[in-house]
Amino acid sequence: MQYLCLIYQRDDILRSLEPPERDELICASLAYIDELRESGHVVAANALEPVDAAMSLRVRGNSAYITDGPYAETNEHVGGYLLIEARDLNDAIRIATRFPLGRLGGIEVRPVANQIQQMVAAPMNALSTSFGVSPMLER
Image (cartoon, rainbow, N blue to C red; front, side, top):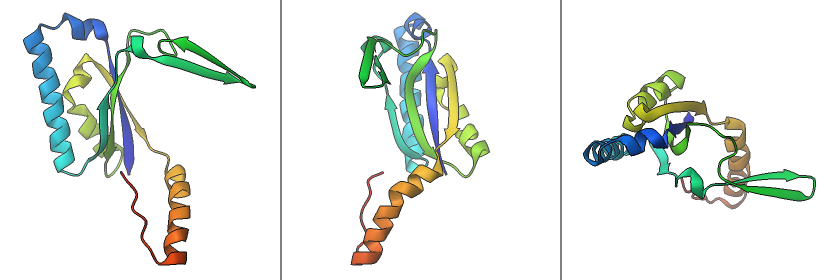
């Protein structure tokens, strides 16, 4: 089963670290992602640009309202994510607990809704059955 791990961080804490300490934390996080990738647990992983690069969008009726910055004012913000494969929620929590950058904030672990995956897979399975081909989906 897939789980999305949203990695929350506080920029003030990250900026307060001495460069060697910050670099060590980032390198340890990258090494852990490589370890997870080699073990088949990582589907995707990315860091996000700082919140001052964010835009928030709200659509109401036929109008779109766009504002600079994140959706909500808060000390912590999403700094990155891991999309992982895990046996169950306990396994996903075990994997997320070891992520080094999680020490600077928190990690939200959320199951990916299987209904959506099945809806996306259904047309591909129909193609496969109808034409005798196996479509390749990028992960």
